[in-house]
Image 1 (cartoon, rainbow, N blue to C red):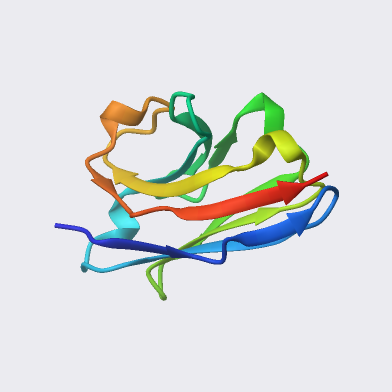
Image 2 (cartoon, rainbow, N blue to C red):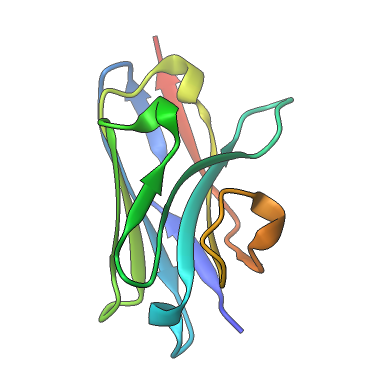
Length: 121
């Protein structure tokens, strides 16, 4: 069992930056693929990035070069550094934990409650 709690969301102007954190409970955090998804109103949940237990990462094309996903296994924490934010990236951001390294939301077994990110124009 893994419990996830996101933090760090808020209101930022277009072009600004935010850093999200996801604190995980459980002793096997380091063995999970950890991912970030986001969901805007009226839209499906969208893959943003994941970090495999080895530290390898994969990003959605739309965020490559602007977002950095990282993990600190000693602190059981996942991070998402977001730069050059755009208004269309306003959404609830969720962290998720799963076994497989995949971009599909149903493959992840554990989810946080989400944190709101609002980017103003």
